[in-house]
Length: 442
Ligand SMILES: [Fe+2]
Image (cartoon, rainbow, N blue to C red; front, side):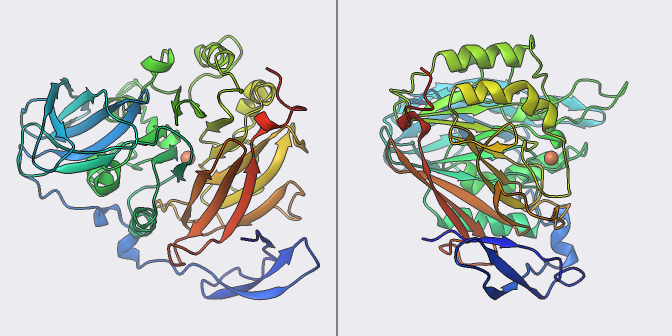
């Protein structure tokens, strides 16, 4: 697959029909027709397109799973009525050899009272194996998930700023047709934006995918949901609903954590763009300690996920990641982080290896993948000329995939919603910095 980079000449403005783009680099310019995404009908931009609540009061809903270490899974789900926080599971449908009961919580938000939020950690589980399970001893729904593999290769789906529109449904449909092991979500999940029932409809919308593969998420600005005096505690709905394995990575907060996969061949830093990251902060100290534990001889792949991008040539959200970049980029560079995935900007952009705003063979590849399909639409205007470190940029909804093939090579691909699922709109091979002796410091 050959990666191409395109420059938007601005002749597409004002129309959603089609426009012409020029390929960049290589042997010169090639004009080609490029169909701009046709927006869905207005009704599909409305969050009400999210799945209706058809489940009975005791029926588990909004099921999602996440990794807790490499041999355990946390199952989260919600029931309207009281129900046991029990997960029964086994390797054959309808036969549950094991049963574990966890905890039930809930939260209030102004006049909203959440359902019963259940979470149970199950395991030990065999890596790479499939498990059937049901929640709250309820026979109405049986779920299935596949554990991430014990060894490379491993496949990540990556998508941010999902929301719950017709565009979101298209993105989820494309992802569901791919084969992936773990989904990485760099923030902005439901776009509930204070209206809590939208967290519930989002949970139901993503359940077919999030109940079947681990979804590892970090927060975005839409997760803050803080109202001075009225609801002064930030992130309460997000933390109550999307408990990530922060305790297992010795983080003091659900807002930043790390996890490993494929027997430690991949380590992923799930950082918090809206948690304090300044020197002396909890996040800064935790990140230092977490990176000190990474042995690149045993962990050839080191990835980071943030929300607000540190590198961005879109006119939207310019400079919003700059304070975090200034605080943490040097630490990530010293650790030879291979790639950083961000959201926030509702478009796709891939940079080359970069550090301190310059090309750097030991810098991380930065990718903005905030084009999941949220209600705010696309960010279509770019700074001109395109910076030399920006290799591909396009405002279309879609998702990305990182196939970590072996200890030295990973294939990144970007897939537009307007194309068939198997069409690759952009791709690049990424070589592990652990294999580059000029970069690896430890
Ligand atoms: Fe955002």
